[in-house]
Amino acid sequence: MMIKILLVIFIGLASGLSVGAGFVAFLTVLGIIPRLTQLSKSLRMIQYYEWAVVSGVLVGVFASLRDPAFHISSFFLIPLGLTGGVFVGMLAAGLTEVVNVFPILAKRIRLDKQIIMLVMAIVLGKIFGSIFQWLFFIHH
Image (cartoon, rainbow, N blue to C red; front, side, top):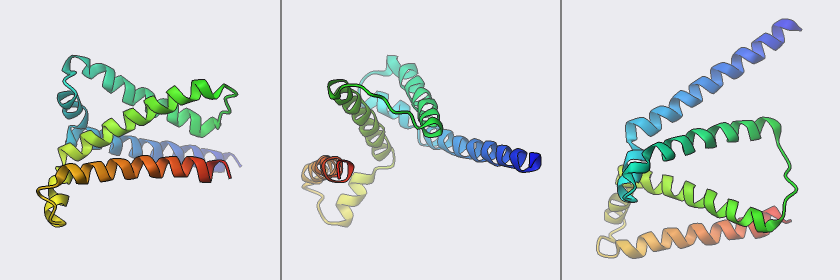
């Protein structure tokens, strides 16, 4: 029984280290956080972005291990959800900016001149898809 517990601990630590190293390499090699600070013109706040990512990862790991249930009002959940969505959206925007996803996609589907329409279609699709998921799948 003790060997089984030690094996599970070893596999958990090895898995966590490999995923964490991959995440750090992903952020470092692509330079998402520095590019995000350039786009938002907030270069002096780069350490806050970095600590936000680290804190988010630690809280996410803790939440996935503990599965907490917070009994708080929806009025407090709405700002939390909005700030979380803005943060994830900004990281996604930084990622797409670094790897030039939109210009490549626009050329492939022959929408070079209408790139604003392409971006707005993606944004609105994400918004309506998220609202649909929350209204339909979460409450049913």
